[in-house]
Image (cartoon, rainbow, N blue to C red; front, side):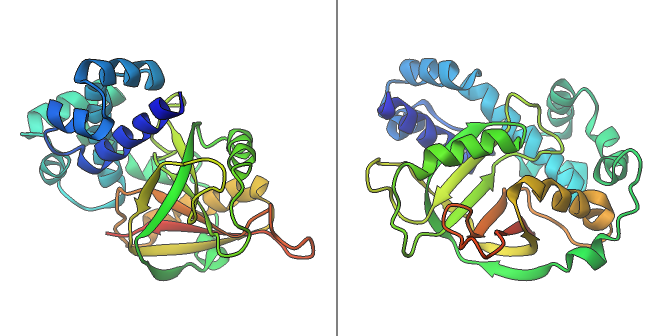
Length: 274
C-alpha cells in the first residue's frame, strides 16, 4: 500500500511539472514502475479521476491563475499551458469552470477583492518583503482539502509522527492548488520537511526557487485565514505585481510542535512572482 501511495505521489509530481507537454505511455510507466493499464487504475482509484483528466484540469487551473495574477493575453496563456489554440482552450476552460476565459478575465477584480469589496488597509497592515528562495528538496505527505485548518492539523499530527530530527529540520506547507478557484474535492495541501523521516521513507520533491513576496503571520495557525483575507482584499489586485501560477508556500519558522511556549508561532506566507 505504501509503495502504491509513493507511486501516486511520483506521478502527481511528474504531471505537475509536465502538464503543459505531451506525456507518453513510456513516461508514465518509467516514473511509476507499473504498466500503463495498472497505473491508470491505481491513479483513478486513489485520486478519483484519470491521469488525462488530471492533466487537463492542471492546464485550465494554471490558466486561471495566469488570468488572475498576470496581464498576459488569453492567446498567450492558452499556448503557455499547453493548448494548441484559443478555441480548444476556451472549450476546456468553459467545461471546467462554467464560463469563458474572457468572462473570467473581466470578473477577476470581483473574485480577488470579494463580493463585498472589503475595505481592508492590507498594504499598511501586512508590510510584505521581496525575497529570493533557493530550490529546496523536501519530503512530504498530502491531504485533499479546501484549505481546511482541521484537515491540515490532522495531516500535521500524522506527519510529525514520522520522527524528524529536532535540530536542523525546517517545515513547509505547499498549497498545491489555488484556494480561490478550486473545488472542495480536488484541493491539495502538502506537509513538508527538509530532512527525511527517521522511521518512514517519504517521497521527495523540490520546492521551486525564485522571487516571492513574503508576508508574516504571527500567532496561532487557527487565525491564518485572517492574514489571507488581508492579502486577497485588494492588496493582491492593487499591488501592480504579476504572480506566478506555481504554488503558494508557507514556511513554519516557529512550528507549534517545537516552538518555545513563551514565543508566538511564526508563519511566513510566500506568494511566487513571475
